[in-house]
Image 1 (cartoon, rainbow, N blue to C red):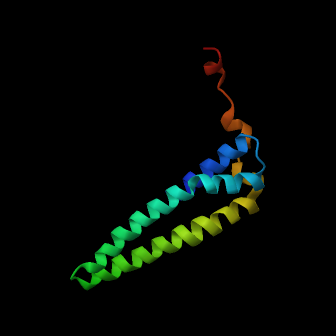
Image 2: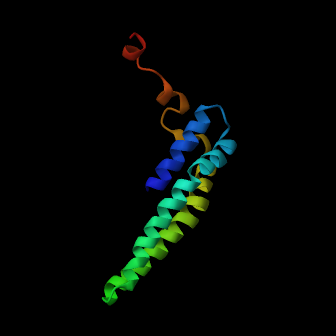
Length: 111
């Protein structure tokens, strides 16, 4: 879930900087690709290390989790997530749209 939060946050930053939805998604992906890849690689290595143990259940869980993280980081975060962002378009920023989160509260603007 953290991967998707990082990706959506970077896409939102790109949208607020004036890019269109179609341009903001690749920009957000480019800015988070290294983070997503390195975090997934760390988790895959840790879970794959479980397969060197002697207990069969731990080996099976380690292998399964390593494969699941690999599929999640590649297929879900790199293909399905951006595709859903593109399909949803401006609905990604519901409720209120892009300008509501960037507005300065009245009390903060008086200081």
